[in-house]
Image: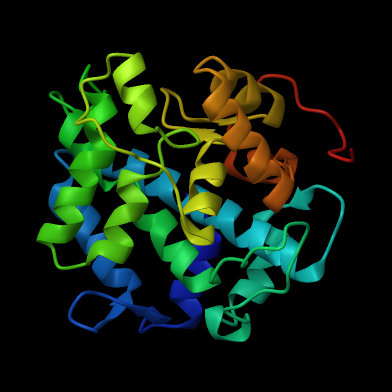
Length: 267
């Protein structure tokens, strides 16, 4: 069992509330509600474990990137769960929602909102599996399905957009048309700092069978295959949030890292 940052928050804060993160009815979102929502959509225990574990890992990466920004570190973000578990055990209340500026002159993510977004971003994946084990050819719709399910469950537009806008580095309306994607022709681009850090963190872990981490080099290569726009957006996210060092997390989760992993992420 993976003992993640999210599990640490749950153990330290039994109420599991994410301070300041509310649904469309102004009700504070809780960790238990998020997990129950995943459970209600999952067609099998296997898929629940796969998607929920992925979501927790992305949330851990998001938290570490935010903390790295807060501490103004220039080296690769150490996202070892053991390293951050003590801080996480104090709950998100101990982390300033508004982080100092780092690299780019734009607002830094609200940490609690970004973590919740990470935990919810992939709920649409349950809707693109016919056998409860693998994903089918309709996977490209999982972001849109998640958006609709989050609205249906009362989470509201602010949280639903994490699902809609997280795929790759985002997909523009022009790219939907140019690539003849089956999606409705509109923008699926992360716009806020919180949406961007979730989309960026999501690039470094895959729900493959077996699941694995994705090195920075491999993630960059995968994004570049989709053209100039996605590549430029990925580079902008790198400039804002920095690179990540997956070695510690990979060892603790006992998952491989796909692609070449450098010993240091220094530029």
